[in-house]
Image (cartoon, rainbow, N blue to C red; front, side, top):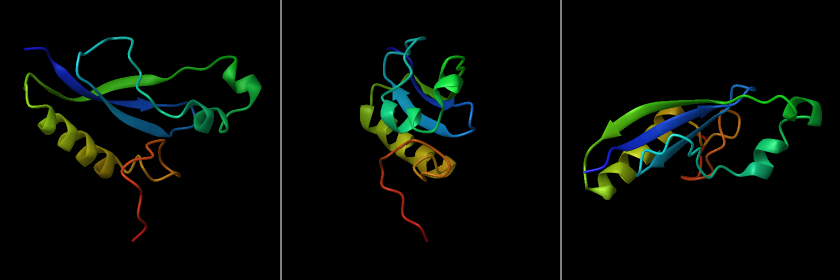
Length: 96
């Protein structure tokens, strides 16, 4: 069994992205929309750019559905699908 992880990436502006990695690859940083992120930063800011990746959940499960459900749950918990908070575009954010 390979360790599966869900991670939180924090960008310099404080916005976050939640993603999953089914292979636990150290240098995998997800599939956030690059253009969306770049629009939040000037060229000068982009020239010296650091992000932080934190593992916020891990499991040795072989049940990929469990990982997918947990990813969506954490996206909702952290509200990273709210455009004012994060870069996740799915599941669609619904204002209450």
